[in-house]
Image 1 (cartoon, each protein chain N blue to C red):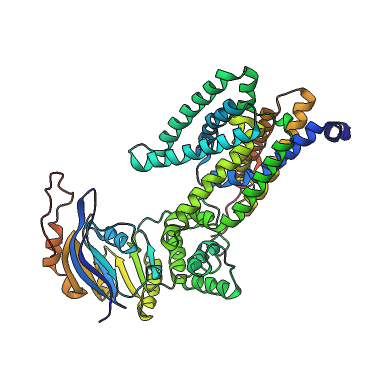
Image 2 (cartoon, chains in turn purple, blue):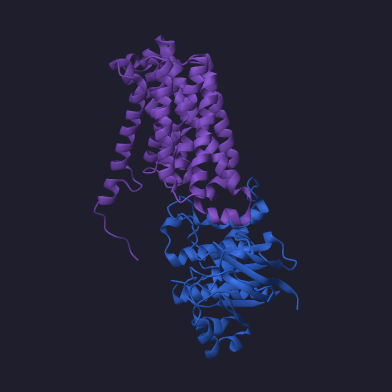
Length: 289
Length: 247
């Protein structure tokens, strides 16, 4: 029974194994970056950057068709450009960062959809928007795993400055010149994670696997290490169950994965011991002073 | 007298409006100085100039023999993200940044020093608490513990005792006195003249321009306070170009 439901699809079909491997790579590489996005109150920034990747990937698509390399390089260039441009607009003009990010991502999304439609079919457009997790080829898997390794390695290297940049940026600036380096390295990490995630989940869902598990983890752990661990676990479980659901009930896989992560978030929100609804509402006698 | 810090015809400001105007003063090495003056007098701006986050519009600040990395700074409103999941011990340990850098290991003797710093500000037992669980006074104690670990030659404190109760203030003042005893130079922006009279031998009174600088009793006179109070509160939007050269 459990064999049939959980193991059989992966044992029988290569594309399911590939999809699972790709999702695990994303969970390990991108989700910890999502934890820092959340802690830096940049969840929406991440979302905006995910959309911003689209025109870059679309130009890559125009030039080379559904080629992995071209779309990845294009996406990275566009993602970094929007991150840097919106940062520049915030510093150089009176516009706040949230507004400038929203402006940039709306423009990018419109531009990206337009570019893809000029050449491709609606099917191509759907692939770009919602990903092709069930059609990951060798090149895509190697790319996803390399990006995940790069992301884990960079995070390990950057961990202390990044924690300080989140907790007390003013202090980091006063003791070290690493503040700007840390900030831009982190933005680069976000773009790398999004580009990887984009291959599998598409531009609209890419940030979901980063933010939803992180938000869920907030209700289970109060330490940064615990947060990262729980977030990765939630992301992997969501990938596994999402893939199985999509297999058994013929649902689109990307949205199924994100929706399961969403359910995990909802459950954590209610039952999580660290500030969840029930933990807050539980009538417990107060302690001695 | 060795000079730790010299302001030479220093003008600092925002959008060409001077906030510190043609300031000429020297701070002696090892001195304990209070900076007083009305709101908008340029006290915080002066400290920002010293740590280098603001470039002078004119004049300069010279650090006599103290290298930039030997300055510790406690901002008025520290932008510590209190919701960030970090423990008291870890945040205090960041005071060792200059020694361990981004990659160095916390060795046993570092851990001991962190423990000593935490106990000197009376927070033993709080090491593992997340900073989000602290009161305002406890948070200020944490920031002082971190300052202690920085082993700075020059300590800049911007209104360190605002919204702090008497006992916490007494404890933190004893940390300040200890720095003074160890020959470190301390500059603190303060508003409470009682505290200044009781604990700070030197005072620099600022009202955009220098009002007075010297032994506290000679600076905190009624006449000086009156002069400081007559300073214009807001910059004049129609101000012309200042044609004053070196003061």
